Figure 1: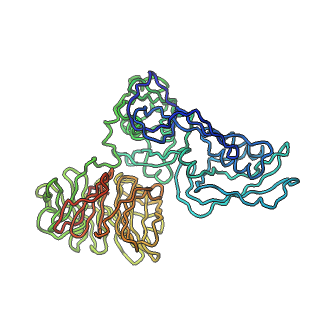
Figure 2 (figure 1 turned 45 degrees about the vertical axis):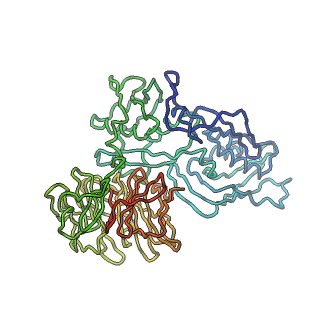
Figure 3 (figure 1 turned 120 degrees about the vertical axis):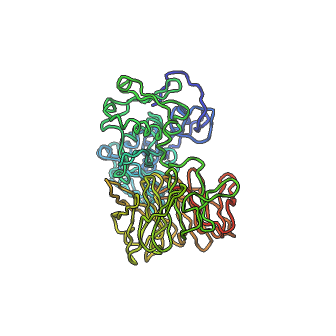
Length: 600
């Protein structure tokens, strides 16, 4: 947990807090006491006057079974006790079980999240006076599951969990067959878990980081920073494991995290000293990005069993690790668009053609994509001759990188490593993915049938280079699919392809990466167009993140950039969305099309 080597200085920072209260509300039937207190991880309202390192939270204290409680109350009390993060081992919840069941119960295998209350069924009409056993079924609406790695997966339908109860010593009812899972309501989830982003270097060991989003249970005995670092050391989830590595040597564990003045001291066990010299920067970047706002405005020092790292203080400023940003782009990225057959760079007043062949009147091209090279490169569909690339440097000329008929190729997409991606239709139910580097194209292996056996209408590589998003079309209609990119040597493979549960009554018009973890989806249904944001690692639409569209304008294409930039092509205009004003503005008219942000 966080301990402070000096008195708190009351630093300003992002955080939230509950006001201290003397009131304790105890609900016996629900087996929980609610106690606002201080010291650790949960937050509710913004309070910038408090230090981010020591935020108060609301304690949910589990209470043991009442004497002579009915089977229904035992099951309800057990479910409530499972929701107490103030009891990290769930010792009180185990008191609702028989002795044998308490020893065998493994609640960490999975967490089931449900909406509203679970309603017990199955007791009406039973005479329990002389009964030795009985059953109680809890029913509710499923929302999601969280596995042992912290991966969140949306769910639907009815939760129907049956509990078998038997009379234990003293004729008290106890559960003898509990599920190896926790049952939490959506409100419990908000109190008991925190959604966090972990960061790992790519397996190629290139400079940069890849995002891995998980849900971690809150433990009041440790602060949020300790929870984050311990989960980081546990390694990436299975969905991204083959695409990344960790700079932390195997066997590294966390001793403690302390604060000394303006320095956050992270003390590891001795295996951390075996990190290769050329991986120390990546290790510091992992730590910096995972701790995020918690170390803003501070320095960080890595120690080993309380001593300086290899005998010398390893102290660094988190601001020095922006080059590892998984989103790659600056906070105000350059905007581009097509007009009069040329690619323009947007400026405050009007725009100007880019350098090289893409900014000159020449070959007919469209659907451009821009790299993050310096100077940037442009990839585009040229005539009916495939995908060509040119530099925006003066004198840059077109060079074909991927052959094929333009009508069979998806618009190109750059990755952060300088490769161009596209999908080619080779049959009604067969697609080939291509990746080209410096003019040399190679096939990408797709593991799984869904993506390879559908027609791919659009393909976009995430800015951290770890995932692809695709619009696919098959006999069941259109869908958005997400796959993981695994690079090995000069080869690339797409694995772990998952379908987003988008609305089945809508056509998918376009997709674009907002950031490394979020995808914009433009769809059209009977009610008109919608622009929604999806968390791809959780497979769910982000609540309250939908962007209002002008009902009078038909949008044909979108692009996004972090943190919240959106461009749209509509009726010969390119528009930009102002998230603060929740309104659209025009950056280019007179036949402007194909808005572009680098990558994504």
